[in-house]
Image 1 (spheres, rainbow, N blue to C red):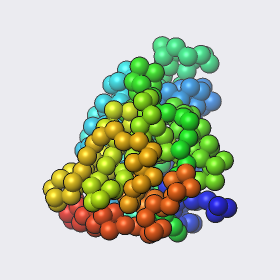
Image 2 (image 1 turned 90 degrees about the vertical axis):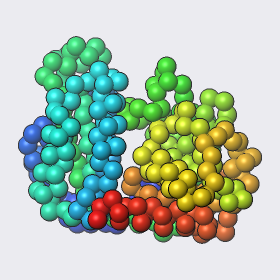
Image 3 (image 1 turned 120 degrees about the horizontal axis):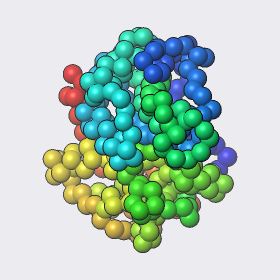
Image 4 (image 1 turned 30 degrees about the vertical axis):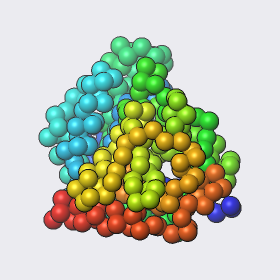
Amino acid sequence: MTDHQTTHQAEEDARNESIRIWLNGKIVPKAEALVSVYDSGFMLGDGVWEGLRLYNGTWAFIDEHLDRLFEAAKAIDLDIGMTRAEVFQAVLETQRANEMTSDAHARLMVTRGVKSRPFQHPSLSKQGPTVTIIMEHSKPQFGRPIRLATVPHMRGLPMTQDPKLNSHSKLNCILACIAAEKAGADEGLMLDVHGFVNTTNACNFFIVRKGEVWTSTGDYCMNGITRQKVIDLCRANQIPVYERNYSLVDTYGADEAFLTGTFGAQTPVSEIDGRLIGNDQPGPVTKTIQGLYKALIERETA
């Protein structure tokens, strides 16, 4: 296992060297998109973010993404300082500045802003939030299905750091990713606090057993927008789907497995802890769901 692949693998695009970035109300060249070392996001991981995907000139499921951004900001008592309409207008301005029409990915980030002193207390962030939109030409490129390794790191209880929160504090997931790479895999499969299969370090996780689609209860993972779209599509198309507790034994015996996320949509998995899943190709249920999701995107962005 020497070849490595990530779940955010994209084609190289030279245009990304000259992209323009939205930073606190101004659109600036990539080289000038700089924030202070006193910024709360840099110093403490104090902020929230969203990933957005552009198809056919339309930002897919933008209302759900903005709902989640503003809910997360409220949860950490962060005033974005912009209305939903203003945030979306900033996304559109960045899109126009980069002349993007499709196959683009945006990362919308809000931190608590520049601190007056290099310490933790939120009251030291006196200047207001830092708001940034990075937008890249981004076409997914997967040479093969993803390989997973189970890691010791958990997505834990909400009283520590709620795993439903899309926060800048990603060290737990980064450590899970590192552990998976050390094991020769592409991404880490994380269990929940009870030892049931939960999520990967960057994506939501599904298995298929005897035509049934299983995913976690959602209690201990980011409840992804693409995850919910897949569940909804299964229900609307008579594909049995269950949000339930299940074990690694159930997972190793699965006929198919795939990941979901805004970037890759549905990414097939071929191997988990050295056990082959399926025949190293996307299975029939995964292919069906990929087709249903593609049709949904076409309807949403027509």
